[in-house]
Amino acid sequence: MKIHGHRGTFLWGAVLLLFIFVLPCCGGGGDEDVFTELPANYVGSLTLHFTSQYPTVDETTKVDAKVSKKGVVTFGSGTMHWEAENQLEEGKTKWVASFNLNPTGVATECGTDYCIQVNENTSFTETIEQYVLMNGDWKKVADDTENGTWNGGLAFSLNEASLDGSVVSASSDQGSATWTLALLPTLE
Image (cartoon, rainbow, N blue to C red; front, side, top):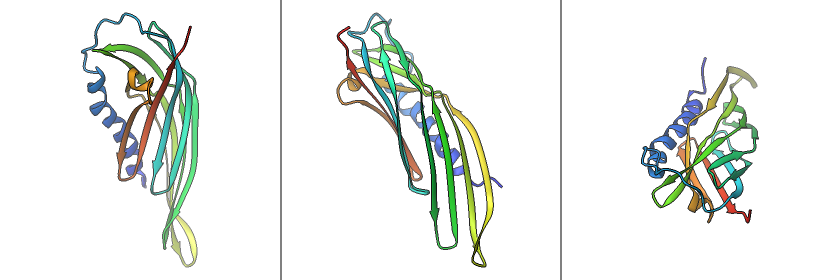
């Protein structure tokens, strides 16, 4: 019995929303100018913050980010893991998830700004178990494990990233995923 279709739908739905609403606003539609050179080298971080109301999850991970004047973008790798449980009167849900982030990226010109195009390259494993209370004991009625990869795309503004951080997020009634790219120019 597959019981967590709504979680998988949320995760993939969030990634799809990022494609639809973010890439066109930052040059993802093919309007990029011919790339020359960025004004500086940059260092910083890419952060993923994931929240969910049921079961309750509030987790964050951060990876290092570097952007060269030539537009080469490199990231470190990171992980995120949680074990969450919510209990109602006669039922409970356990959610265990692990994410491995290995993002890649490239800088492009987008009109008067530069965009940092990022492929999340995030693999995940999640297990959802559901229990019901029967005669005073918890009985497992469903157990489902799913493995997958986020290989979509995120587009960040370099101007925003070097000020307060450029943010890409998606939300539903089941939770939200927020990616933030924060960069500072270096003196190299």
